[in-house]
Image 1 (cartoon, rainbow, N blue to C red):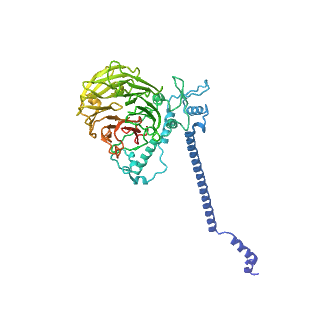
Image 2: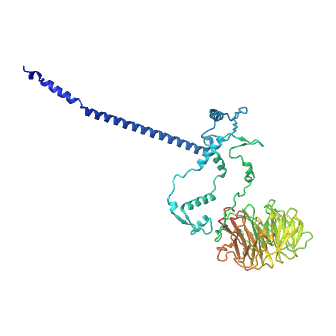
Length: 567
């Protein structure tokens, strides 16, 4: 056998070696496989990490949503969904303070209660910071179109109430939306009695109750200063005065006549609202005193009283609402007690010979009735005894009277053209001055606060004075109204002295309403077509929402003034 033949492998071994060589990967192929495996492992780790982060974010969102829901539940339902476990909270707080190295409170369990006394207000300040952050929340969504949009609020009648200034017209969309919201809140007030508690409630922890040292009453947090407003809570009067009335056009609408259920057969000489704003009296020459419940829709008649021997020239409630004083061109007058439903005839007054007591005024404190007497005398009568308690004497005849300073002072004017100021405590005249341009004074009226008074004359001129300046020596009126051309019979301020009504019974539709802040006449009043006829009397409801006008045709016209939201 040759050397070559000895080195030659068997055919089967050769095939086997070839298969083994084919099955073994090369060095380069091994490196590629290892790199692919490492890349796949990194991708798997990244995916797992992302999933873990997503889970943590989801858990965090769930925790935040759960906290928000607890806050809302506490806000709506109090501690119903998060009951307070007495003692545990203070123990936790004590552990926290103990870890900081100082025990700043002590726990007294002798009275089956836990009272915590803190020496510092660190926790309270932290709570207030949280409350501030809660209050300063940002809106979730803002409409960008609001800033780009402009609205003319002076063009549409029902939007004029949104103006802040008289000459304001175009506002941006965001301002328009905010004013609409403010108007809605004003017309639809919420439950104010719940606001204080909701604002002061702490969502994370609860404060202990503090006791009132004077009477032992328990006072919840947020009500510590309740004694300061105790007097306010005992009255149902408005706490905030009405908004500013704009000049120019008066927004009003006519309602069903106040005496539609029982019209008068003669002229209406007196109309007046009771202090409760629901009861209205109407009286006239048909000798009937009628009472109506005013709602603006039906105006139900409550009662009618017939006085056989006295055509009524004037009737008025006492300001305390207990009685009605009725007078005519007679030596006597009547008093009707609303509680007892009893009519008393009073007079003639002792020592006086007046044939008529038809003109009078009642003091705001319901203590005195001032009658216009003969020869410049003013008769003072007590509302309790109905007896004459004093007289005042003018140089000329007396035509008109008006009380001021809560009933302690009296203004009078008449045939000598002067305005007298009387002190009813001393029964003396402490000031007398000429009403500018007046020869015969025929009407007087003072504003509810007493800061202004208006004087009318038989020439139709109405002067408006600042009373303090007038008493100080300034004779010039702050405004002279010349819109009437006949004798002024009536002057009447409304409840907040933003409107002054002036009228003359000698001419049809001769009734003007003056905007006091600007001293201008409302251009859309009186109504067209002479619907007022000859106005004889007028009154505003205590809240200013209603205005009643009695005329010579026996009707009591009722109007709604939309600026005022209460009757």
